[in-house]
Amino acid sequence: MSQRISGVKGMNDLLPPDIEVWHFLEARARETFRRFGYQEVRTPVLEDTALFVRSVGEETDIVGKEMYTFEDRAGRSLSMRPENTAPAVRAYIEHAVHVREAVTRWYYLGPMFRYERMKTGRYRQFWQMGGEAYGSAEPAQDAELIDLGLQLIHGLDLPGVRLELNSLGDENCRPAYLASLTAYLRAHQSELCAECQARLERNPLRVLDCKNPKCQAVVAGAPAVTDALCRPCQAHFEAVRHKLDAIHAPYTVNPRMVRGLDYYTRTAFEFIADAPALGTATAVGGGGRYDRLVQELGGPSVPAVGWAMGMDRLCLLLAESGKREEAKPELFVAAADAAAQDEAFRLVSELRRSGHAVDFDPRGGSLKSQMKRADKSGARFALVLGERELASGDGELKPLAGGESVRIRLDTLGAALAARLR
RNA sequence: GCGACCAUAGCUCAACUGGCAGAGCACCGGACUGUGGCUCCGGGGGUUACCGGUUCGACCCCGGUUGGUCGCCCCA
Image 1: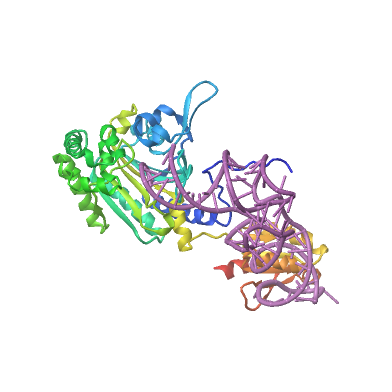
Image 2: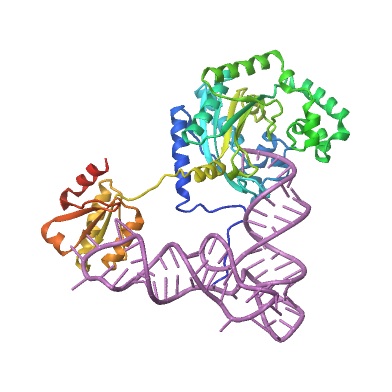
């Protein structure tokens, strides 16, 4: 045997039957996006490195140390997307979508890449789906998007996912807040962990969600961002909350929640699940408003808001609750003898052509082994085709879960199946 | 990037102090001549992750590599 080549660390194969969980997730998700009028976009996995440096932020962990970046043969610096908001915005600008429509609502779904140490619910190739809405600065847009996320999660029958909400202010009030926060943290600098002392210089907001108890104690007395919002931001935040209240969407305000990407303004939120299956990876989704990003990437001044969910994590939760979308055949056709194999093959092909899910064993073999395979396939019915059936034109439709077989005319098989599966 | 633990059949795991690598499940076949599931019987499956060392002898002890799990960190 030749030397074996194994898969790349942190990148997983998704095989049957586990893939059925993903089919369930994707089908429910697409249905929810459809109900909300969001349309799918697909952007390339590779982008100009500068796109992520300018959007996600040079100082973030994602860009600073987690991107798969390399030069192509022409010497261009390319990066595998670590997230899909920036690529979507790039496509939005590049195709001048704002010229054709005032409000654009997109969703995406696909693999993202971050070079990270792996653990439960965290992989180097991971899957995200997300919704993005461009063109509306109104609180109703924030609320609709959050409602979309909540309905999607609800549609997956996942209990125990809660919503945390915050506002990070905008370019008018955030500088002042950062100044007062930095001043407060400097006064307590010696009480912070080493990591946070460094964050104090680079990105003081990140100190707020440090899990270190010492830092938590300091943060407890820190000025809250929600108290420092300017009037318009405060009004926006209140309006979003009002809309959420109106649709009875439960949430908790967490003024210490910040996000890992630099582009957020005003609304920020996370979908959090406290489930053992996720280990310490409790966030299944998160997002917020990014009113400046389109312009910062060279586009028109168009406000936007969006979120992303971790599909791997959702699948961990779905696997635990046993949710999946199975693809079982309706009928399994077995050939009792070699002479019947041609007719069995023809019958299977014809039924499939008319829309039925039908399986058979291409190896033939003993009837017994074919019946075993029929059972394993999970088919609802089995039909044996042999000398007798070929002569009479009749067959026995046998329910594999138990119960009486039914005699039927073979030329009405399709209709008989349809009637029984209704 | 830092630390801890782990790696034996496709899967879950045994194998005494260093002494012939096993079981259950799964898969294939038979008992049962054209009918699956249950039961019984049989069969195929292994460079004990990889490389090196110690030893008469290594799944076991030692070193390294790779991979996995869990914390820190970060996030989805």
